[in-house]
Amino acid sequence: MDKKVTVLLPNGRRQNVNVKPDMTLLEVLETASAKHGFDSDEHCLKFHNKDVSLAQQFRFSGLPNNCVLEMEPTEKRRTVANVIVCIQLNDGTREQGEFLPSSTVWHVVQELCMTQLEAYESPVIIYMRSEVIGVEQMKNTTLKSLGILEGRAMMRLIDKKPEDLKRQANVYKPAEVKPKVENDDDQPSTSRSAIGAAGSGGGGGGFALTSEMVKSLKRTAPEKNSAKEAANAGATTPKDEPAKPKYDWGSGSGYLLHHQSQEDQFEDNADENPGKAPPVVNVIGPRNAVLFSLDAANRNNDDLPDSFFDLTVNDLKMVLRDLKRTASGNEDAPLLTSNLRELERQKAMLAKLNQYKDCVLRIQFPNRYVLQGIFKPHEPVSRVEDFVRAFLANPGEQFHLFTIPPKKVLPSNETLLELNCVPNAMLHFSFVEERLNTESNRFLQEKFMEQLTSEEGALFAVQKYRLTKASVSSS
Image (cartoon, rainbow, N blue to C red; front, side):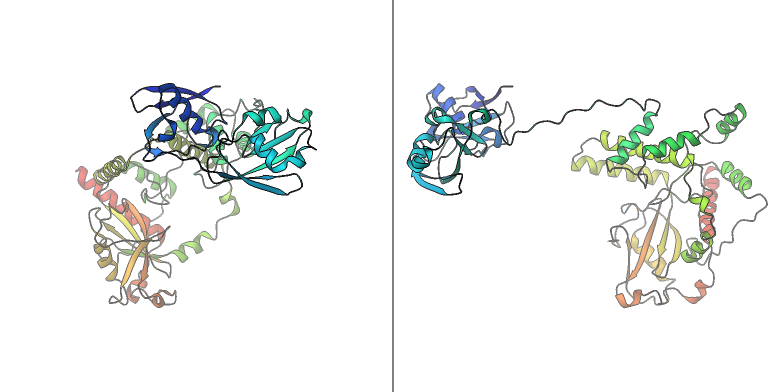
């Protein structure tokens, strides 16, 4: 395919110049100048107002096809100076000398390698990726046409047999395209897109999903459900939606928000735990403050059977759905400027402010105790610090709150909405003095440590608070 560039001349005219990959930009300038009567030594070429090197070949210049080059006059005329040319022979020896850029390659070879040239059947000069093959081509090629205008240049002189001249080294050969194997037509499109997203490294399911897992999903899932099972499934939950949690903790990092009506939530609690009393909640301060230990929660989870960690059909469906959403989001996301990104951020903040009237914060201490409280989205972090300071054993010590990962210390003057802590967030506590951050240190007052609530109770407290607020606002 022929390539061409457009040269914008100083008189306002345009000149199209057909170029080859090994053609130098100086030849482009000379061709355009000769057709309109300009002196090429008094002009230069620019691309997007930047000077381009005239010694470069078009293939190495980085210029696209059909580009527009501006020809502008230079401050001073280009002078012709001698260049130092060095030729390396097959045995590794080198010969060098000074020549004018208008000298032919054959003249350079005769001056430097006349003795060795007699033993060559078919001499070939290699400069960069250009090959000058045979005596006739050497006589018609000048140093200037190779882009050697100033400075130094290194060439190689080799001997190639006539039958080897048809084969070129360092030539790219595209790989053969293998035909697609159409043996997975019965695989759903969701599975194929999810597998592609997982294989490309952009998955969001937490583990790599392979074709063997999808096949296992097919074998495990029943082919046809009975009419009774289909009716029950349609009446309880949607087809692709996961089971809803018992308590709504929010949509922050590591959690998922499910919008349920008040009646549905009470019905779910009654169905799952018939006759079971709600967990005990010990409110230890303002803002519905509760305190619980993560170690106690982990001890209760140690009794889970091994079958609890086995992947089910619903788990794989959720992974397929998440991978598909991640892949489609990366491909369809438009490119936004900084102003548009800021506008989108402001819209998201307004949407959160309209949807959530409160936010739940959990502050985790180095000894794995967690303090939970409820705040307003517009409140600054300084209010949270005052809330935490009331429970500390040493309230006079300086501390800061931060989020991970990566670690980001929260400034006291910014609001929870600006820091993306709505509707919930997990914050971490740390004293400014590092020696006080050991696990053996006492962070909270002893009277609060004696009024612990379970993690389930902390979730229940949030759920109860939101249901109470929803009933009050509706009435």
